[in-house]
Structure formats: structure tokens, C-alpha cells
Image (cartoon, rainbow, N blue to C red):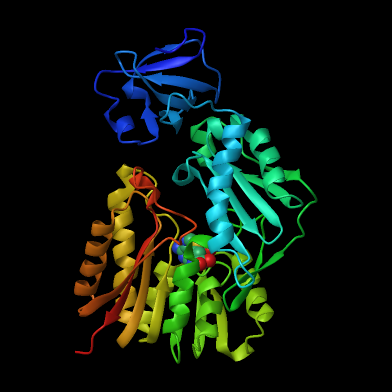
Length: 402
Ligand code: SAH
């Protein structure tokens, strides 16, 4: 039994099943009783209906996800030392296996997947960029920052908690310096054969799509001699990789002028000949249609759109969007050409995504094969007990000659 002075939540009968399978989220509807008046983000003891302890979690009074579990071991104490231990465990794997001279940026802490719900820490050279996306993460924010300073001394730490999901937890959006000195306007990182400028203050996420690192390497290996169309190109990650792999030309297409401007700089940083790349500002849905009318053809097309699925309710509309761009891409590919197609929506199941791509090929009257399946990079691990952490999926499809 849990001591009465400790804030606690008791689950409804049977609702402990998912916790016994170590799924870290407790939804509002699963809770029978709240006792001890827990505050925003405070640690609560979680018990089954019969009072048996199930572990400790952080309380989020305004969110549908009412509790996020820190630990399933009731004998653990969630304190500063505990936080340090979890951080250390997450960082150890990355620093020994992932970071080296040829890779100076990676995700050090990937929230639920590393047993730290809502906590993201990305490293860009000597700068850490943190996001605290849930009330528990927010509650432990200063402790986590102190522990990071101890574990990784001398690094600058910047916060990018200016993400919409914080609204669901009724947390204000916030960004700014947490420790060390203000990062320079652009930070340079090395990723394999490519170098990139990262804008940690204004860029998407914490500045760069680190989750695509391994897929950019695969694009590099596949691009020799190809005329490439890079859709949703952001700051040119796939383009620089493809050009390093010998692509003859890359056309980068994005709706954001700011992203394209930084993409230009990234191509310059890598000393790529000016006639091997172009940038075009525009809407992918419209421009692909126009290219089809103009009968343009490419050897390789990359489709890495933003998250189309925001909720279960928007899944159908999102599916139509994915199908549309994939169909157009198939129409624009030469026989033998490659389509790198992605969905970063956690709510899009991989089998449905595969079906959408298959339907798109059928509609385009193209026969195609999946020659590779792609996912998020190793520093964005998928926790087996939390399948929601598998969010980025992709296929490399090859169009067959008729
Ligand atoms: N492939 C990139 C990341 C893509 S992020 C990388 O590896 O770094 C998604 C990008 O899509 C953003 O840059 C955003 O500006 C752009 N975007 C969103 N909707 C768009 C649309 N309809 N047309 C063109 N670009 C769009």
C-alpha cells in the first residue's frame, strides 16, 4: 500500500493492464480516484483498483494523458539522482556509438523511448537543445538542466519548448538560453560527408531533422548520376547528401523561403558547384501537377512531407494527401527511377502507408517495387512497450520498366 500523505491515483478495475505491459501513458478515463491534491507535474504514486502499487508517474491535471509513468518499479524514488541516472543511460549509448568526428549532432534523449516522457535533448556540436513537452518534464526542468551540466560539462544549453503540443498540457510556449552562452545564429554540424548550418533558435524542431540521418546516407548511396527532385526540402539535407553521392542535379522544392535560403547556404558550405542544384519556392501539390503537365522527368524523387495526420479524425484527409503526392511522383519518375517516400505521422500505420503508396502507383499506371524500408535513425529509438514511438516510416520504391 502507498502512504496516505503521498499524492496518488488509483486506476479503475482492469485499467492496470497496459501499465503491466509497461505502457507509460494513463488516460483520464482510466482513473478512478485522485488523492492528496497533486500539483502540476508532481510525482504521484499509481495503484491498481485494489491498492497494489504500479509505480510512479507525473501528474498532468489538464491533459487527456493524465499521468506519464517515470517508473514501473514502486521501490524506486524519483528524485534528482534518478533523473541523472536516466539521462546518463540515454546519453551513454549515443556518445559511444553515434557521435564521432564525422557525426557531431544527434538526439541524446528521446523522451518516452528513453524513459523520460516529454524530455528531448539534441546535441549540435557543443550546444544542447532541450524541449520539455509535458508537465512532468516541465516540473523537473531545472533539475534536468543541472544534471546535464554535470554529465556534459562546458556545453551551452538552449531551450526550444515552443512546440504546440505544450498547449495540450496547458504549458506556455517558451524558448531561450538555459546555461552557458547564447548560441551563434547558425551552428555548423558534420553529418557523414555533409556539413550543415543549423538554426537552433528559429529552425523546425530543435533545428534539424536528425531522424533522417540514416536515410540521407541511403539517398547518398543511391544518387550517382541521378537528376533528383527533393520535395519538402527544408534546409537541403537530402540534397547535399545526394550531391555528395554524385547526383547530377537536385531541384529543391519547399514552401518556406527561409528554409530555402538556409538550404542555399548549406550547398555553399559544402562547396557544391552552382550548376548542380536549384531552389524553387512553391507548394509541392501544385508544382508536381505543373511538372506533370510539362512532362518533366526525374531519376529520383524524395517526398518528406510534414506531419499530415494531427488526429485520428484527420487520417482520411491525410491519406488523400499522401496518395496525391505519391501518385504525382510516380508519374514524374523515369522507368528504373527511385522514389524515397516518407510519413512522419505517428498516427499513420505503416501498413496503411504502404497501401496508400501502392494505390498511388496503380493510379499512375506504374509498376513498382519496394527495395528498402526506412525508419527513424538509431538515436530516435522505438521503445518496444511504447509502439507510438515508431513514427517515421518510409520506402524506397523502384519503378519498373514496362
Ligand atoms: N526533408 C527535410 C525535412 C522536411 S520538413 C530534411 O531532411 O531536412 C517539411 C518541410 O515541408 C518544411 O520545410 C516545410 O516548409 C515544407 N512544406 C510544408 N508544406 C509544404 C507544401 N505544401 N509545399 C512545399 N513545402 C511544404
